[in-house]
Amino acid sequence: MKVYFTQIYADVGANFNISHKVISELTDRVNKELVDENVFELKYGEGYKLGFVISAKKDIDDMVIKGPSISGRYKTVEYIIYLPYEKVMENPDRLRTILCYVSKGVTSVLSAYNTTNCRIDVLLSDLTREMSENPEYEVREEKGKIDFDEIVNKARRNRKQ
Image (cartoon, rainbow, N blue to C red; front, top):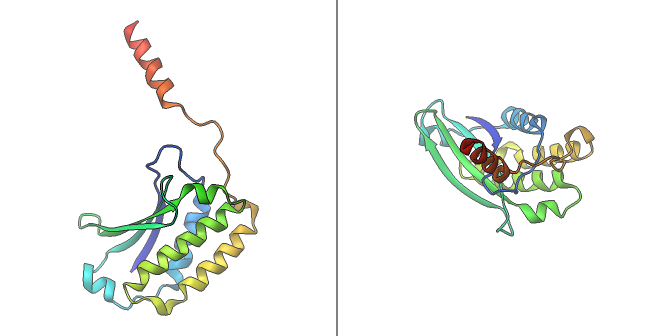
């Protein structure tokens, strides 16, 4: 079983500027450490990947996991890990907070596939510590947010001319 991480934010204004370096390192380290007990493959078939989609919601107070969403066409099984946007943003060490939530979510999902013997929780804890101490991985607030209403209104005005 191979694992991948990605991020998609559906709530307007509720997103984290997580570097692709963080996502890549997370994916690489989890895949190196993961020990599949064949439960996942027996359930979904050979060649399927397990995906974790990181997202955020403004109206939740704790992490919520949704899924799985299964695609036979792409051979993926995805879980969405919704993080509580307000709680993360009020914390000065946002990356550590995000990775702690992700760690809990991943550990919870993997336990359903009998992968609890693979030190994932220790690996993610070490990774969280390393990344939160390195400014290269820092989560920064976005600058220059796009106002889509302004763009749409401008396009409408241009169309009328």
